[in-house]
Length: 161
Image 1 (cartoon, rainbow, N blue to C red):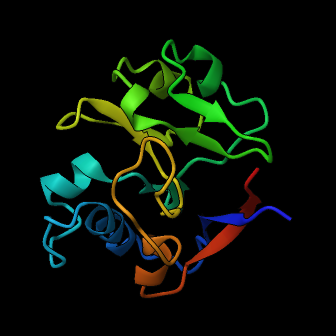
Image 2 (cartoon, rainbow, N blue to C red):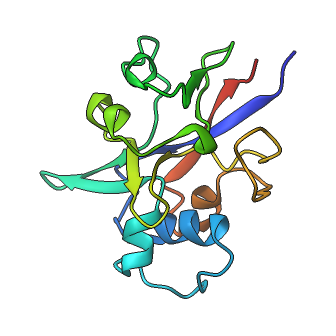
């Protein structure tokens, strides 16, 4: 059986929208960012790969759902978004030019532009980053899940193929 990738899943009843998950997302990926950075710091807002949004008092997580019809994949003119067997959608960062086509196509607001890097990014579940397009190793599953003080975030699995 292929390995399982884990991705964050939110229980809105437990979420306080504190931003700890967004901070963990950034500090896990960018070791130069201090661990005590605040959720509203520009570096967090700019570089986070997931976001908690509150609509009508109900928190929701803007994160890739790996949708079966994946409108983001076919619109990428540089093949930076790839659907792998098993359904996982990955953004291969070195292929991305930051054109924004995938950002416009994503119905879940799960793909963001990182202006400082000049590319689009999306949550990859903090998967071990030994795959093409990734340079920073992250181990232990999604950093956001471990950082959530209310345990509103859990992991959902997707088999890698």
